[in-house]
Length: 559
Image 1: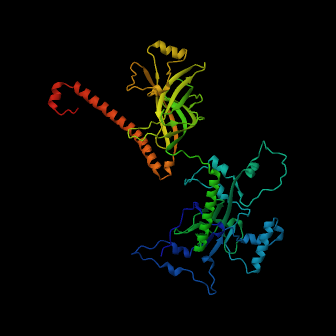
Image 2: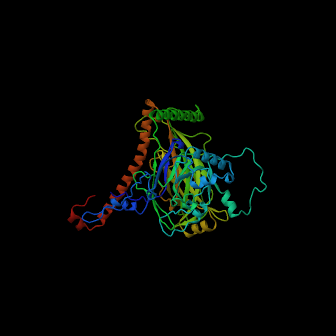
Image 3: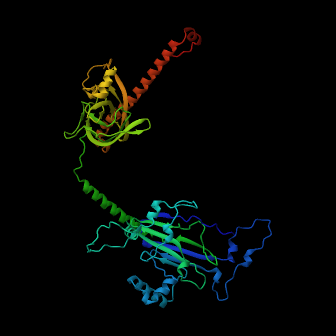
C-alpha cells in the first residue's frame, strides 16, 4: 500500500486558546527512511505490469527484539516548556567545570537524577526552552515569497536583528544611573543588542539529532522539527502546522551519507472534563459580570436622558476638502440653521465655524484643498403637533468658500447648502456651490486686481430663507456662476426614549420618525417628478419641431 504524500507546507499556523498553555501536549514521531525501507514508500504499481513484490525485502527485527539501525524511529510526548536533554547537553553538563550559570547547575542536577533513575526517555528528539541560549538562524533569513531568487528587503533585514523580551523577565527594583544616557554614535552590535520588542513572548523549539548511528551529540546534526511561540494573549504560533490528516514532513540530511527522515507533530492535549468546562464558564460569567459592573460604575447613574417625546441629534462632522475653484488658499465658513419650530440647541452650543486656510494641490484636472477640519454640535427636536398634515423640517448646513491671496485680499468662491441626513450613521456629502456674478470685463478685472466680489447678505438665500412667508420665491434676474464643490463627512447619532421604551411614547415618537423618513422620501419623489416633467417637456418640444405631415402620418406620438 502506498504511503501518503509528503507535506510540503511548512508555513506557520496561528491558534488562539483561552486555556492555560501549560496544558499543551504534543506527540512527535520521528523515523529514518533508508534505502531498504524507502522502497515501501514508492507509488503503487499499475495493474498489468510484472513487478517484484518489494515487501519481501523489508528488514526484520533481530533475535534480540531490538530494531535495526536502518529502521530507527522514536516517538515522544512533550509538554509546554518541558526540557528534554540532547546527547550534546548530557555530555556538556556532566562536566561541572562547564557549568557557569545557575541554570547550568540546575540542568546538571537534573541530568544526574535521570542517570540514577535509568536514563533519558529520548535519544534523538530533544527541546530548547525559552530559558535556553538558542537562536534559530533560519528564522533570520526566512523568505516571504516562493521565488527561488528572493532578495530580502530593507525591512526584512532590519527585523531579523530584533529580539523579543522574555515573558518571565522582571525589572530591577533599584537601578544604577547610567553615565551615558544617549549614545550618539551607536555601533551595529549596540543596536542589535538594544533593539527589543516589548511584546511578551515565550518560545520553544522541538529539535532532532539526525547524526549517524554512534555519532550523536554534534551540533552540526541538529535540526528544528517544530517551533512554538506563545504570547500573553493566548495566541499560539506553530511552525510547521500540526500534521493532522496531512502527510508527514521530510528532512534530507547533507553530507557524505545523505539520509531521509520523516516526522509528524500532533496535538494530543487532553480535553477538558464537563465539570471543568462548567467551572470555567462560571468563572467567565462572574468575570464578565464584574466587568459590566465596573463599566456601569464609570458611567454612573447620572447618564443624561432626553425628555419624553423628544429626539436629540448629535453630529460629529468633518470638512474634508474643497475642489474645482479658481483661486488658491481656500477656507470655508459654515453654519447650521435650525428650523424655527420645535428645534432647539443648548445655549453653549456653537453652530458655526471656520476652517484654516489651506493651499490646493493638483489632482487630475482639479485643484483640491484638504482641510480635515472637525466640528461637532447637538440639537433637540420636540414634537408637539400631532396633526397628520404636520411635516417636521430638518436642519440645514450652509457653507461659504472664500480665497485669500498674498495681499490679504479675499474673494467669495461659492455658496452651498445641504440638508442634514435624517438617518443615523456615517454619511459623505458633496455640496455643489455657486457664486453671484456681474456681467462685463470690468467686474472680473476688479475681482482679480482689487479682490472682493458680490456677496449674499443672508446665507439662507442659497435655499429658501427662513424669513420668507410667501408662496413663490422669484430669483429672476439674479445671475450666478457654478463653481466647485465641498465635501463633508458626517457621523450622525440620535437619542430618544422611544428607542428603549414600549409605552405610548414609542408609538408617538415612531410617528415622528416615520414622518422624518417620509420627509427624505418626499424629497426623492420630488426629484423624480421634476426629472419626469423635464423629460416630458423635451419630448413635447421635439414633437413640435417635427414636420406636421410626419406627425399626422405616424399617429402614435405620445405626449
